[in-house]
Length: 125
Image 1 (cartoon, one colour):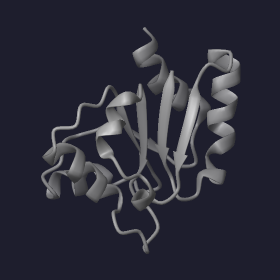
Image 2: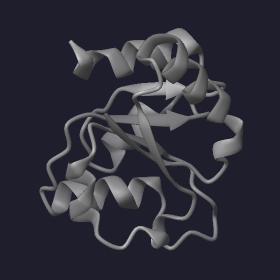
Image 3: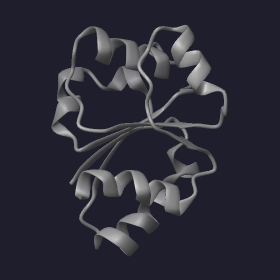
Image 4: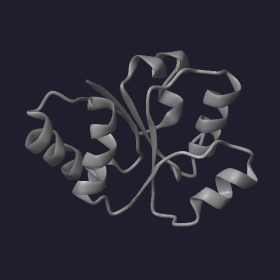
């Protein structure tokens, strides 16, 4: 299974992803990590992944922040199997609503193994 992770500070969540992959998925998850959204050129490729994890607060110097990525995906009707927001902001649902974006599942940082597993296991069942 292929997992795309937009996260500018992946080192902060890396151990959670590695642990859940080894413990619950026997290492079958393949991670592609994008630390700068502008490095991901073809957003249509997002549909090739089973899961997309999106840090909603990408680096301030980013040309396209997490909200911009969501807007692009929605505006261009890019098909996504499962998108989960990673954030340290507990009020993110209100901001999504404010911006007219869809409601997405959210995992708060620091990432709890069981929450990550629960979200990854949805597609698996």
